[in-house]
Amino acid sequence: MEAEPAKHDVFQAIADPTRRSLLELLSERELPVTAISSHYPMTRTAVSKHLRILADAGLVKERKVGRETRYRLEPEPLRELQRWLVYYERFWENKLAALKSFVESEEDKL
Amino acid sequence: MEAEPAKHDVFQAIADPTRRSLLELLSERELPVTAISSHYPMTRTAVSKHLRILADAGLVKERKVGRETRYRLEPEPLRELQRWLVYYERFWENKLAALKSFVESEEDKL
DNA sequence: TTGACGTGCAACCATTTGGTTGCGTATATT
DNA sequence: AATATACGCAACCAAATGGTTGCACGTCAA
Image (cartoon, rainbow over all chains, first blue to last red; front, top):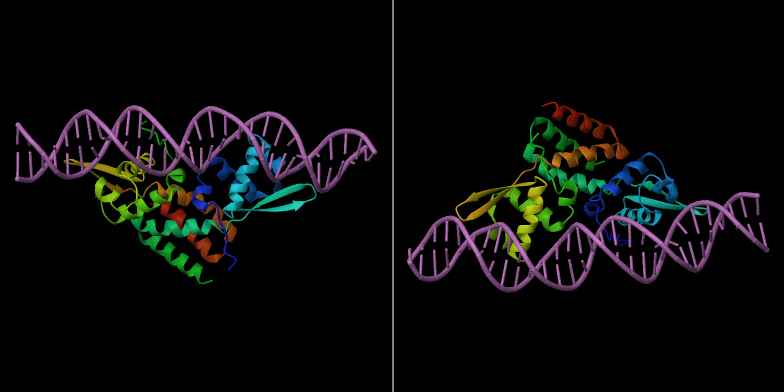
């Protein structure tokens, strides 16, 4: 139960360059919407929509503090992307890549 | 010189579930368009368009054989995705992840 | 050489996407 | 209490996306 609706998936969320940039920005520090949008050549509303899409995909979390809404990175869903990629690593495989796959399978056990 | 136009980037190319499925299918064997499209509930033309987008992103290569056009996976551009992901691995970092990053940096030297 | 097969292309269509403006409302500040 | 700040929401818009049908054209088979 408690299944995430996940209206937007990770693949679609990171397809847009602005949203990838937002993830990078928010990985450094938690920020409120206006501060975030000051970095972009578009309106606050547009940035806010991108943030909502990222939130739908679980890639950012919002927190209300007084009149501001602060966003921070939530990297966990990117693991799905990583798992997806592992399948294709075999196609440029070599000994180091094999070690990497081993590391990943070990990570899953933690 | 000879810079790839790259009208579609990898992030956008893999955003669509049908295209991710196509990559998986073509990773097993090279296939002509009609054979490919028989796996999908859409027209050959629609599949063909998806293949073109994948080709623009460099993720598949086409080869004309008689009257058919055969497609095969070209995994190399996925490395860009992998490099992008490495940055975020620090956020679920542990010793094994650190080893993995090391492995990746060694891979780049090959 | 006649026809069937495999494909690409152009035209078209509905929906989604990425953006805008304007307004309402809750929270701070003076 | 009045004003300024931070934000969300609804309405709207142009362009991109994902799909369709119909047709033209090169290639293979009878």
